[in-house]
Image (cartoon, rainbow, N blue to C red; front, side, top):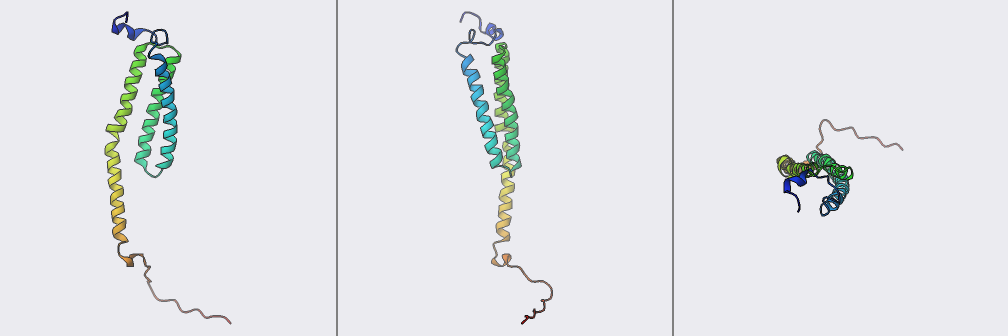
Length: 147
């Protein structure tokens, strides 16, 4: 370390100035972007009937896409380190906020709604007679068989 810590914030983010951070940062951004694409596609297909989970994955998708793409762009076009650091902090913070603060109450409410629906369905069909159709109205006249 030859400079004061705050002076590193305004250096260009490249392999010369940040030899120990440059390659791990852009490689991690690329790997996380690929993982996010795969997870988003698999989870949205698996959870297509549960709208709150789809909303969660939509939020995670756009936040991750923006964050990891920006990190790749900032690495390729040699931005200042302060912008790279701000992107990492804001992006990861937003991902954590979405997953652990914004959506848990929504997901709990959805799970309670599903549990209530299952309970009422069990109650409705608990009686064996509930599944038998009851005839209403007059009986049909018997058909005559043709000979």
